[in-house]
Amino acid sequence: MRGVPFILCLAAAAVAIFACARWIDNSYAFFAAYVVVQYIVLGTAWNILGGYTGYVNFGVTAFFAIGAYSTVVLHKLVPALPLPVMVAIGGVLAGLVGLGTGYLTLRLRGVYFSIATLALAVVVQTLITNWDFVGGARGAYVLRPRVAPLIGGEYVQYLFLIMLGLGVIVLATARAIERSALGYGFAAIRDDEAAAEASGVPTLRLKLVATTLSGGFMGMAGAPLPYYVTYLDPTSGFSLNYAVNAIAMPLIGGMGSWVGPIIGAVLVGGLQEYLRVTISSAINVLVAGVLMVVFVIVAPQGIVGLFQRKK
Image (cartoon, rainbow, N blue to C red; front, side, top):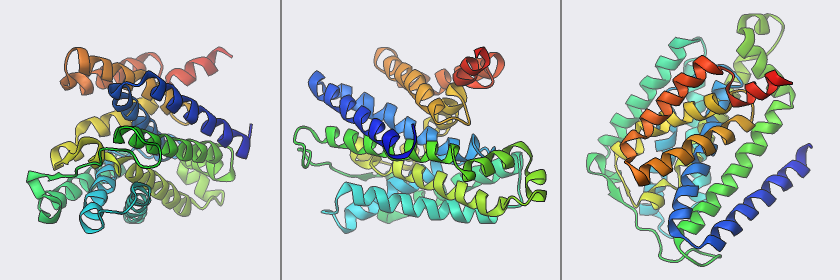
């Protein structure tokens, strides 16, 4: 299944999921489902760079928070601006940062690139913490409307619908990359960048594309966050949960495959939501960390790799 039919299938699945959630008619179902789909988007975005290209990005929170805080800025400057427009702007800003990151770190490989992305997250967090316009260290309130536009009902339903739309876009992009010359170029860089460059693969250009796409989609995933939490501060915007889960879910589901982040997000995200309600949200990172260790030892290629091995 290629191109348009696959996108139509994704869109149909998104509509079915949204219809089921409305039929259940439970506010918590929308809040929990939003988190799971958010991690599908975030994990897939990370996978474009970390799974397809082999460049491990520890600066997830930087791009995610850029999207979130761009919404805070736009909410203050243009309160009537539609959320989809804010999401697009957040994605563009995060994508530009991703492009700059790729350009500045183009000579770094392996652990050195990962350290550079971690440093980026620290720099962005420091800037946000000292930026009074977005609340600085004390945070900022973003009150969401009571009723969702277009569809009616609670606003969280609209947020979930927006995130489902992002999921369709990101998954369609990831699958298209896998089956294109761009994806083969990414795989060549992941397997042996020096050999790929010697063979004529434009490694610099491809790395810039990967960092831009990955950063842009992470920013889009973070853009609706202020309306979801209604109060955003650096502690929540740069939460370790986002960085750990964005890596854990593709790793558990299977890196290098568009299906992997979906499996990982449903499994890990669903488990975390259940434990958050029954025990405490404080163990979310522990759950993701333990599962990562287990899968690195037992199934380093993730769940998708287990099934491929059996064929």
